[in-house]
Image (cartoon, rainbow, N blue to C red; front, top):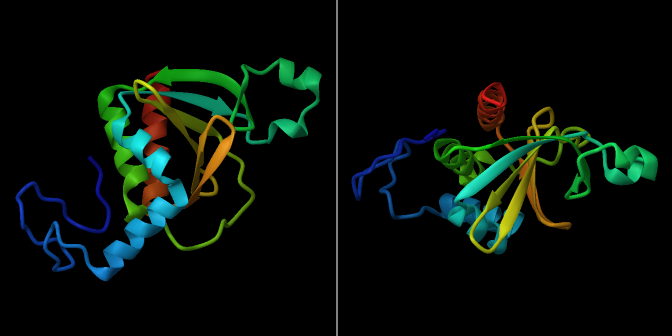
Length: 177
Protein backbone atom coordinates (compact mmCIF):
# COMPACT_ATOMS: atom_id res chain seq x y z
CA UNK A 1 0.00 0.00 0.00
CA UNK A 2 1.34 3.41 -0.95
CA UNK A 3 1.55 6.17 1.61
CA UNK A 4 2.49 9.79 1.16
CA UNK A 5 3.46 12.37 3.75
CA UNK A 6 3.02 10.32 6.90
CA UNK A 7 4.00 6.96 8.26
CA UNK A 8 1.39 4.24 8.60
CA UNK A 9 1.61 1.78 11.42
CA UNK A 10 -0.46 -1.24 12.31
CA UNK A 11 0.01 -0.72 16.05
CA UNK A 12 -2.77 1.07 17.88
CA UNK A 13 -1.86 4.42 19.38
CA UNK A 14 1.36 4.75 17.36
CA UNK A 15 2.62 8.22 16.57
CA UNK A 16 2.82 9.33 12.94
CA UNK A 17 5.51 11.55 11.42
CA UNK A 18 3.61 14.72 12.41
CA UNK A 19 3.65 13.75 16.09
CA UNK A 20 -0.05 12.93 16.26
CA UNK A 21 -1.37 9.71 17.71
CA UNK A 22 -3.20 7.44 15.30
CA UNK A 23 -6.90 7.32 15.94
CA UNK A 24 -6.89 10.94 17.17
CA UNK A 25 -7.56 13.40 14.36
CA UNK A 26 -6.07 16.85 14.49
CA UNK A 27 -8.05 19.84 13.27
CA UNK A 28 -6.09 19.69 10.01
CA UNK A 29 -6.91 15.98 9.58
CA UNK A 30 -10.59 16.65 10.30
CA UNK A 31 -10.57 19.43 7.69
CA UNK A 32 -8.98 17.18 5.07
CA UNK A 33 -11.43 14.37 5.87
CA UNK A 34 -14.37 16.78 5.50
CA UNK A 35 -12.93 18.00 2.19
CA UNK A 36 -12.71 14.50 0.72
CA UNK A 37 -16.26 13.66 1.82
CA UNK A 38 -17.43 16.94 0.30
CA UNK A 39 -15.51 16.42 -2.95
CA UNK A 40 -16.22 12.73 -3.50
CA UNK A 41 -19.60 12.31 -1.80
CA UNK A 42 -20.84 9.82 0.78
CA UNK A 43 -22.26 7.34 -1.76
CA UNK A 44 -19.05 7.26 -3.81
CA UNK A 45 -16.94 6.87 -0.66
CA UNK A 46 -19.10 4.01 0.56
CA UNK A 47 -18.87 2.26 -2.81
CA UNK A 48 -15.09 2.76 -3.01
CA UNK A 49 -14.67 1.30 0.48
CA UNK A 50 -16.75 -1.77 -0.33
CA UNK A 51 -15.56 -2.44 -3.89
CA UNK A 52 -14.69 -6.04 -4.68
CA UNK A 53 -14.13 -5.67 -8.42
CA UNK A 54 -12.81 -2.93 -10.70
CA UNK A 55 -11.98 -2.48 -14.35
CA UNK A 56 -10.05 0.04 -16.40
CA UNK A 57 -11.14 1.70 -19.63
CA UNK A 58 -9.34 4.08 -21.96
CA UNK A 59 -11.14 7.36 -22.67
CA UNK A 60 -10.88 9.79 -25.57
CA UNK A 61 -10.32 12.83 -23.34
CA UNK A 62 -13.18 14.74 -24.94
CA UNK A 63 -16.83 14.91 -23.92
CA UNK A 64 -19.30 12.86 -25.95
CA UNK A 65 -21.15 16.05 -26.99
CA UNK A 66 -18.04 17.04 -28.96
CA UNK A 67 -18.64 14.13 -31.37
CA UNK A 68 -21.28 13.56 -34.01
CA UNK A 69 -23.58 10.54 -33.69
CA UNK A 70 -21.60 8.79 -36.47
CA UNK A 71 -18.32 9.43 -34.66
CA UNK A 72 -19.74 8.18 -31.35
CA UNK A 73 -20.87 4.94 -33.00
CA UNK A 74 -17.23 3.86 -33.53
CA UNK A 75 -16.45 3.99 -29.79
CA UNK A 76 -17.04 1.23 -27.24
CA UNK A 77 -19.77 3.17 -25.42
CA UNK A 78 -19.82 6.28 -23.24
CA UNK A 79 -18.92 6.39 -19.54
CA UNK A 80 -19.72 9.46 -17.43
CA UNK A 81 -20.09 11.56 -20.59
CA UNK A 82 -16.72 10.46 -22.05
CA UNK A 83 -16.44 8.08 -25.04
CA UNK A 84 -14.59 4.82 -24.36
CA UNK A 85 -11.75 4.19 -26.83
CA UNK A 86 -11.34 0.64 -25.62
CA UNK A 87 -11.91 -1.52 -22.59
CA UNK A 88 -8.91 -2.47 -20.51
CA UNK A 89 -8.29 -5.18 -17.96
CA UNK A 90 -10.02 -6.10 -14.74
CA UNK A 91 -7.88 -5.09 -11.78
CA UNK A 92 -6.56 -7.68 -9.38
CA UNK A 93 -7.24 -7.28 -5.62
CA UNK A 94 -3.83 -5.69 -4.95
CA UNK A 95 -4.34 -3.12 -7.73
CA UNK A 96 -7.83 -2.33 -6.41
CA UNK A 97 -6.46 -1.77 -2.90
CA UNK A 98 -3.55 0.35 -4.13
CA UNK A 99 -5.81 2.54 -6.26
CA UNK A 100 -8.43 2.79 -3.51
CA UNK A 101 -5.69 3.82 -1.07
CA UNK A 102 -4.55 6.63 -3.37
CA UNK A 103 -8.06 7.89 -4.12
CA UNK A 104 -9.34 7.77 -0.54
CA UNK A 105 -6.39 9.43 1.19
CA UNK A 106 -7.45 13.04 1.82
CA UNK A 107 -3.80 14.09 1.98
CA UNK A 108 -3.49 13.20 -1.72
CA UNK A 109 -5.74 16.11 -2.72
CA UNK A 110 -4.82 19.77 -2.83
CA UNK A 111 -7.04 22.78 -2.36
CA UNK A 112 -5.93 24.06 -5.77
CA UNK A 113 -8.29 24.56 -8.66
CA UNK A 114 -7.79 22.63 -11.89
CA UNK A 115 -4.55 23.61 -13.61
CA UNK A 116 -5.52 22.69 -17.14
CA UNK A 117 -8.41 21.53 -19.30
CA UNK A 118 -9.68 18.23 -17.90
CA UNK A 119 -8.95 15.63 -20.61
CA UNK A 120 -9.23 12.21 -18.96
CA UNK A 121 -7.32 9.30 -20.44
CA UNK A 122 -8.59 6.57 -18.10
CA UNK A 123 -11.54 5.61 -15.96
CA UNK A 124 -11.72 2.91 -13.33
CA UNK A 125 -15.12 1.62 -12.30
CA UNK A 126 -15.32 0.06 -8.83
CA UNK A 127 -18.11 -2.45 -8.16
CA UNK A 128 -19.77 -3.66 -4.98
CA UNK A 129 -22.51 -6.32 -5.07
CA UNK A 130 -25.16 -3.64 -5.60
CA UNK A 131 -23.49 -0.40 -6.75
CA UNK A 132 -20.64 1.09 -8.73
CA UNK A 133 -18.66 4.31 -8.84
CA UNK A 134 -16.28 5.50 -11.54
CA UNK A 135 -13.06 7.43 -10.98
CA UNK A 136 -12.27 9.45 -14.10
CA UNK A 137 -8.52 10.11 -14.21
CA UNK A 138 -6.73 12.89 -16.04
CA UNK A 139 -3.08 12.06 -15.51
CA UNK A 140 -1.93 15.14 -17.44
CA UNK A 141 -3.98 17.45 -15.19
CA UNK A 142 -3.31 15.38 -12.06
CA UNK A 143 -7.04 15.30 -11.37
CA UNK A 144 -9.75 12.81 -10.52
CA UNK A 145 -13.53 13.09 -10.81
CA UNK A 146 -16.08 10.61 -9.47
CA UNK A 147 -19.47 9.68 -10.88
CA UNK A 148 -22.32 7.17 -10.68
CA UNK A 149 -23.72 6.62 -14.18
CA UNK A 150 -24.05 10.22 -15.41
CA UNK A 151 -24.29 11.84 -11.96
CA UNK A 152 -21.03 13.68 -11.25
CA UNK A 153 -20.08 13.64 -7.57
CA UNK A 154 -17.00 15.85 -7.71
CA UNK A 155 -13.32 15.28 -7.29
CA UNK A 156 -10.22 17.35 -7.17
CA UNK A 157 -6.64 18.06 -8.02
CA UNK A 158 -4.24 15.50 -6.63
CA UNK A 159 -0.76 16.16 -5.28
CA UNK A 160 2.26 15.69 -7.53
CA UNK A 161 3.26 12.57 -5.58
CA UNK A 162 -0.22 11.08 -5.96
CA UNK A 163 -0.35 11.97 -9.65
CA UNK A 164 2.97 10.20 -10.19
CA UNK A 165 1.79 7.16 -8.21
CA UNK A 166 -1.46 7.01 -10.22
CA UNK A 167 0.49 7.22 -13.47
CA UNK A 168 2.85 4.43 -12.38
CA UNK A 169 -0.02 2.21 -11.22
CA UNK A 170 -2.02 2.69 -14.42
CA UNK A 171 1.18 2.01 -16.40
CA UNK A 172 1.64 -1.32 -14.58
CA UNK A 173 -2.01 -2.27 -15.17
CA UNK A 174 -1.81 -1.36 -18.89
CA UNK A 175 1.42 -3.35 -19.37
CA UNK A 176 -0.32 -6.40 -17.89
CA UNK A 177 -3.26 -5.96 -20.31
